[in-house]
Length: 355
Length: 267
Image (cartoon, rainbow over all chains, first blue to last red; front, side):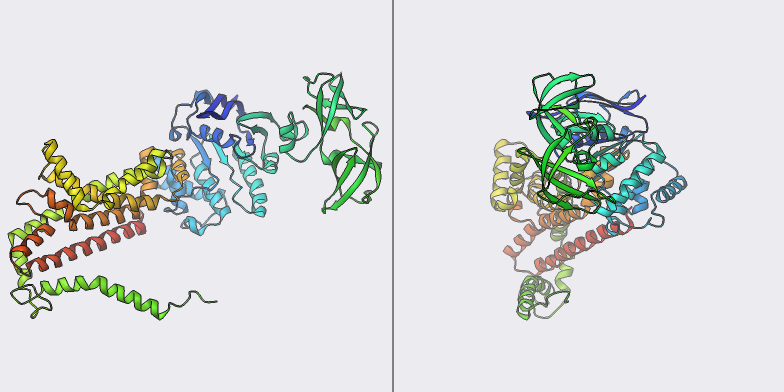
């Protein structure tokens, strides 16, 4: 059974919609990310789930209960804010005890739970510190402990890593994911960072212009983007103009400057119409790496950029520039600028999308 | 590396001079109140507690002192509550009305006290709503004058206040009132008490607005001092001044202590 269900959730401000008809089901114990650029409505959606914003229309269910009209304090939902919102006039222990005191728990029980929570987030001995004495990462751990100690049904995380520096962000990404897995707590994570979403999520909902445009596993989202927006927002892509020739079972045959090639494609692609063919840079095959199937196209190497683990090529094919990336492995073929080469790709790793 | 640039001697001298100029009237009043002579003179003809005793024994002055104290206390309480509520609205509302209202709330400070007092007096008399020359009418005048000071200090303490602190408290299970009491109020308490101290001092020393609104035979201290000096040039008024200064100084020290104590214990 789904743990969180959003039904036609909409929030409008004056003329425009911040969130339009969002329908979503999140399973129990699932780590679900709302991913999108700033202003896409992801934070508004999260704040509606938390109860800070009243939806214009639509409903929010947790389990069987319609919580749309409940105030935040009666929702049993914990939230960690982007800036952590540690109460500056309370020390770490008092911050963590805040929710427990409101629940009128006995003092000894509160002390025991606070201690356990500190242990859980690796901050034993931090009881007496104040917010100003904590680093960003420590504040985040306190914010998480403060929420988790009340054992909420659902955990909401609003861009919790964006205020941290890069190294710490990498570390916290896995730490949060591990903690979430251990606790099996249903989590909604809001981020504009594709790496975070891909690394941490069980499923991702990509949002654009107040709507959810695609829901899927990280692999679905990355490998089978349904729209050009998803393609361009998540990772880099080569986008080529093609014409749809015909359907061929699950695949679709498109024509790129007269070269016919097979690609994966949506069922709504009509023969004769314009479409976009999308291939990720790492899926562009060059030289000896070319496989049995797929297109064979002539291209010229414009530049080669060495990036350590990968080597990046800018290629010219016809009038279009194409970016290719290869793993920098032993015996890998390298191409100097100006070299004429043949490129191609596996049809199963190319996607035809409505233009 | 130096921690701070040294303060130039000229700057120090100017600062000292300003301090002396500010404190001089206080010293003069205190010395005049301790005058041993018959009349209000400076420098005093010897020091004595003669006029202090006279002040303490004067029914007029003592009742004026107590009257002013009560008036200042009540108007401080009212304007602290009203001013804090107004500041919350002003700092949180994004409507254009809030911006316009901010200026409007500050008007009593800009307006000459005499004008405000006269306006209120005319209003009370012409509408005949039973406020002319009553305690309530006077209190309204004092609240009007003191409220802007609370609004100014509390609004300043709300600048940069992180609303997600309140939201965090709410989702941890706090009702709106509990979240306000345990989080917001604690964090803006210094601003509120600073505003309250201002309000008390302003009300206690208020003269111009009071002029038109006093209840017959119940003069606040500044009025009583003025009247006394007009008819007999006695140092009792100066002695009253000593007590006025003492009360203001005391209330300032006590309130700032209360705030910092609360910070220490975080009740």
